[in-house]
Amino acid sequence: MREGLRPFTLPLEVVMKKRLICNACGAELTGALRILSGKDPSVTSPEHVDRAPLTEPGVAFKSYEPIMRSFGDAPAPLEFTPQYWLNPDDLTDAVGNTPDNQHLSGCCGMGGFNGPNQICRCGAEIGTLQTDCVTPRVFIPEPGKTAWIENFGTEE
Image (tube, rainbow, N blue to C red):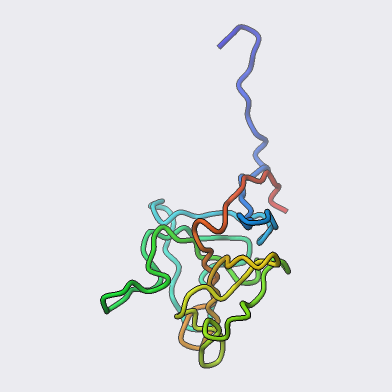
């Protein structure tokens, strides 16, 4: 390091967070979220409880295990990794239901078993929302249709 230069450090109250955006139009799909990794040994994997959110608001979990597996020849729509599990309450008003009713099926809510059921306001399919009585409450973004961008924010 050159003489007189100090290394750059962030104040302790600043936390690295990321926002989810639509790749098609750049719309913000969430506010700033703290992302916990399933590969971090200090992080406990969320418990799957029917009707309960997998994560608390403001937190996303990066899972290296799919939320759904297929028992047939074709893979399940949510059988990919890594995948991010978000609290549905973190979605912005840029996100809404698909007009394709086949993707909105479920008993008491959306099961998310038939592929992406959420679209961006631009019309791009951006992920799957599960809110049914036999699923946890979770939003899972589609890889390739969404992107995470860095966001500097405070704990507030």
